[in-house]
Length: 238
Picture 1 (spheres, rainbow, N blue to C red):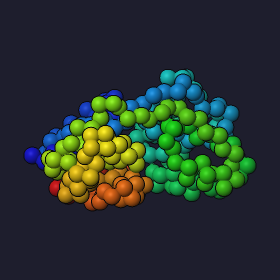
Picture 2: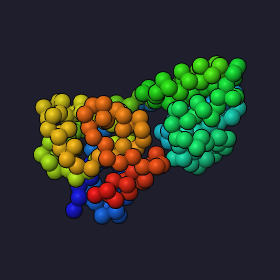
Picture 3: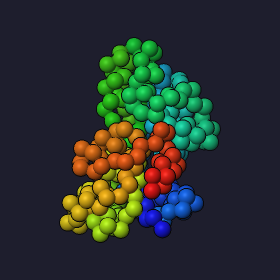
Picture 4: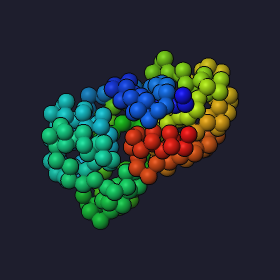
């Protein structure tokens, strides 16, 4: 059976991703490369537009009993679905699930508009810089930090040993943390070689660009930036 590495957080997402890969006929190797550390902060409530970028962010604002003062915008269907399940109304969902897609979506409304961006500490400057350049008054709230779990790295050894058929990278940070874990184990070069002999999937263009800049060849980028689509595309390629 094809062994496929996945790097989803150990908060239920790694388990559900593993179940999906099994259903697709692959053997999952869960190796969470991200852990969430909440900051305890909540978004401002007086912005005309508030942007949330992840399911984790949605869950944290709900725990804080935060309510938007204006429009609520979600990047990505999973974020929108999580918000709506928690009782929020999502006013906009850009067709392109990316920072640049959101900037394009809000460009005509941006001039002079207070826009709140609530996300992790690793959010792309493309979003905040783009909205500022479009004339918005942008405020950013860091809801949580993304750190690498100390035990992460089993997949790097598997890659170095040629024991991976594929890997599913779901963010630029998972790529960077994979390589940091490989460095700690002294197998970075061998792990990259192992990945380049396997099928590598990236959830979107920013993740693909990061991987290829760091020497990892990407074979698959799904049309939709969701894990289900990524897993299916990788297994199809296998």
